[in-house]
Image (cartoon, rainbow over all chains, first blue to last red; front, side, top):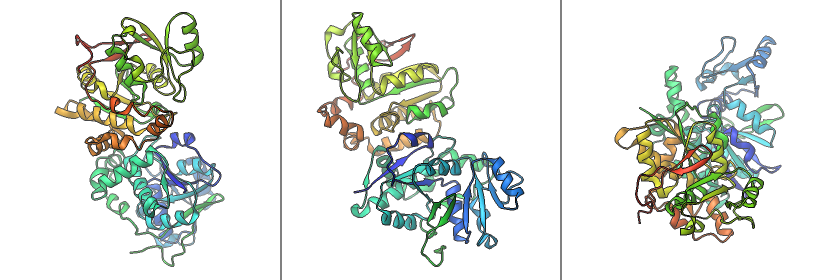
Length: 246
Length: 246
């Protein structure tokens, strides 16, 4: 039976056992992976992660759309910030967006060296779970965290996905991180917002004036997006006619 | 008000904020820090952590007592393994023991470069909490883990200590790791053994035939030991006449 593990920080990723067919699912609830799901809901063609502000600026100068964020703030040159609200825009349909963030795209880049990479947030838990079950491979749920520090909101999302995967005994929990994540999710699932409001990352966003995003990010199953890396791009493997379920 | 943070792995320790007066408390429930508390209960004079089997062998050749473990197993040359049961021996009273383990002494060495270092296990939670309160400094509870991987038993112990420290509002929780640890402890405190029996580390010990140690390690407050690094040695700062409370 395939196994699901949770990795609490990109800094711990090198220590996890990985096979050639392991799928790494990157989770950055506040904000990159929630935003990526939203962008696919609005029909974006592809998202191309880039690892530096300098690289993002070059893509902008070459006429491409760019989303960027460092330490929670959008650089002036970028078209979009890291907020899901920026991607709720029908004008992005069919377009390519180059994307760089403090934590999320860094985690994606790290995982890309190790096998298949997918993207998850609370929004697309049912859709990504269904796709993962169809792959029948070992899974690492990689929490992007904040500058390699553990983040509770990513852990709760990982716990919710791990719980979906072990339902019907299709997957085993691989280790203690997965066991802790599922236990935390079971403990908080009735009111995850209460827990996440205590988190360091949420407090940081609130200081920056972004405290209106939380209720949106905690909606489970409002997106049918199945974002998966193919080559240098994230594309949407969803079979649904419409990505937005609401 | 001073803060208490939890670090889930030695690999995450470099990313945590630390001041000159930060106290790092190393936790390796299965087994090093439980064994160190036990050794002080039986009157050992000092424990000197060493970072390699080779260094430990040299100390043995020079006539010193040596405790050693790698991957759960005692090397043949060592006087003691990493099990607390090995230190329940009145012959160690007044002696120095050189000590090297897979995870615990590595974590101690890592923390030693960053300020004051203390040692905790479930056994000495009340004693170490009392000492930490008297120090009035920021605290990092460093889970030794297993080869840099997260371990649930160390997290539960950290959660129990953090909960004791925030009682009476003497300390604040610093971040998400501390919040998660306290939440997990609150969730499991009635039956921590049930959770720890599911842990990777316990299953590893059980495969090695050491499954009789768990109930001993989960006894809260049976030791008055306050093991603290001074120079190259861990010594006991307990004021109690007798370390064993039972």
